[in-house]
Image (cartoon, rainbow, N blue to C red):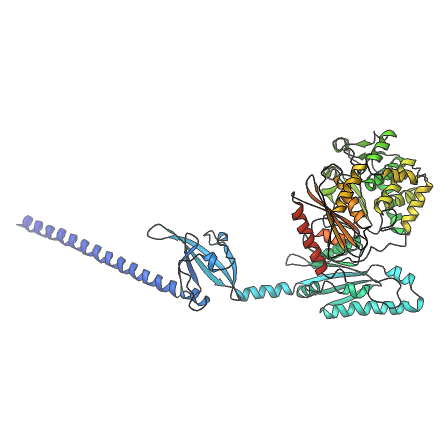
Length: 631
């Protein structure tokens, strides 16, 4: 009986347990389903009532849904459903959002700034949906802008020709000139909310905020024009050089000072009468309307010559090179440095990878006069470099333009001697740099160096003639960029045996060059009535020489104040620019990546399209005139 009773109890317990388990599972299933339904409702309500706009895209381009927050951003009644987002939002770059929450896109709409984040999900059909969250950060953006506007900037200001102005002025006018200079610069500083301090007779330092720099740039540094036009008894125009450094959160005031000083050095090296702004690797130029001021004293030339002498004496070998495709100025200057090194008892070589039409005559004469053993190729030079070798670079200061850029890295000591206006690309860490944009030519600078190193240096007739020919070529027969020191250098070379007739022989052209120039002159046309432009189709190896000489020839046309010649070189279109000083061709061609002087400049453009080169040139000319460079 007990066994039967126990069996019934056991069966009941099993049944009860089974039924309870089923009921519990059913209740749990209902709970989960209700929870999921509640979550869906919450999600839908949340998406609709998010405190920031939300937009959902399908296939990364088509708008399939957006919430009320985004609807409020759109004009009333505008519907963007099933439309491409790039069509509805201007300049919206969806490619910057890859569905990575760490990535975001800055976007401005209706004068408000947004940071857009993205996340990707898949719907029940497996389709990819891109959810874009628009987080407004206008307040942060304005705070950032305010911070950037208030960043400190520093300017060093120097009167370029202070000594020359004072020497050339009457004693009674000197106090007035000083007072006027101070008053003009102080007024300009006050106008731009700047703090100004004069720490030398001709030098000032100015602190101001970055937002004020924008206004100064918009006015194209009008203080340069104001000072140049000032007349208070001064016989020479007063010109300024301004160097400005811009700081950021990573820069200390010491770094800011170094940036500004460097910018001022660049302005001075480019001839003065201009402002240079330097921020990190970017350099901007303003002004540069007058010729570089020729220095009346030769103190700097004497000091540089002494430094060059010491460097040569302390070297085992001396290598000399100019720019690629050297001209008479580069080769003549190289010969002058070669003779100086030999006089000082050093082994010296000139790096020349063959001849070219510009130096064919001189190169041939050097071969006849047994200079062949000192003219070596770049490969030979690199193999011959020793531990204490010296490299002297003449007539160029841009690494990309030298005869052999690898040589610059190969030697430890480098000297630069150049007369071109300093470009933003510059060979750094040199042992000595002598750049004087006031000089007519590098041959003039080298002639002065020879004179100050030792007046007992005996030049051969060919060397003296080559130096004279270099000066003759760059001054266009002593008519352009010719100062008193140019004639002094020519006189010194004449005493050393330079042959003036032979110098002209070195510069003679063959018939093909003359014919090509005549053809180019025939097809010349005018821009703004005073600028002559022409094309050269000739694709011979003499194209660089033809281009330069045609630009010179165009200046001889009555009414022409500047000329540009476009031709096709081996590596793209080349442009040569020339002027008599009223138009700064160097500033124009700098916009195309070129450089040079106010009167003589050049540029090289990639590609083979002469028409495209002309359009780029015309645009640069228009920008130049828009800046008011010619009044």
